[in-house]
Length: 164
Image (cartoon, rainbow, N blue to C red; front, side, top):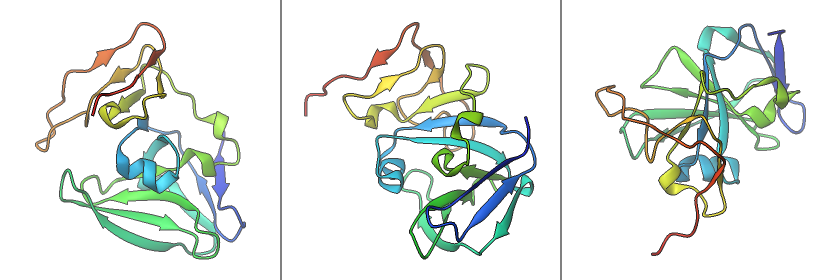
């Protein structure tokens, strides 16, 4: 994969990534819906050491996860408000880039071997889940790091209306 770069809406902040993503998470949790202002977050995860800022310095908002109780740091532009990436107390060697901030978001390929869909129980009723990917109603692992059993859809799957 060639070098990847991205930045915020106003151009104040720019970053470059030196390595390929380790995996890609499509997250439908309410936190990611709020952070992105959309139905889900496409989050390629990189080694934190592979991310370097090439211009500007982000502002950081520290948020305590309702699920794990651990902190998530959101790195964003104080001028335009774009969140570029997240870092995690629980996974200190990783950073999760917001794919929409990449100069070429299509450079991140979602493949069954390296991607998963999580928190689909919180997904919008019109969300379409991709076939072939490990899919989880909540997180992919428990608090101790033990993996949950995934579901894999054979065809695109619409979450559908939930009775409330």
